Length: 73
Picture 1 (cartoon, rainbow, N blue to C red):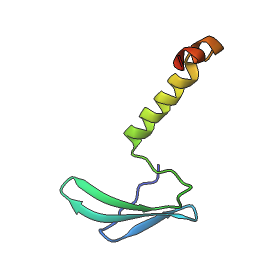
Picture 2: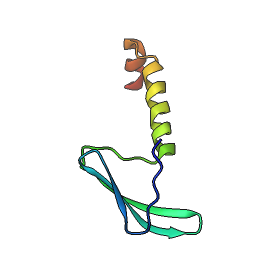
Picture 3: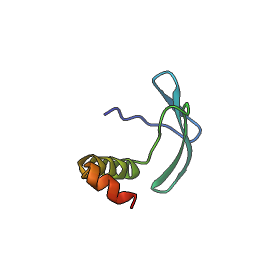
Picture 4: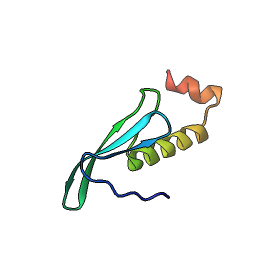
C-alpha cells in the first residue's frame, strides 16, 4: 500500500485518468472527490463487498430450467 500525505485542495493521480482530490478535512473525517471516466466504476468498499457477495450468491443459485420457469409463473 502506498501512503501519501495531502492537504485540502491537493490531489493524486491513479493511472492516466483517475484523479483523487482532498476536498475537506474535519476532525477525523476526510472528504474526497474522485474524477474518473464513466467507464471506471467507483464504489465505497463496503458497497463493493456487498455487490461481490450478491454476485457470488447469484452465481451459486439454482439456475435449472425448472427453477427459471418458476420465476415467471
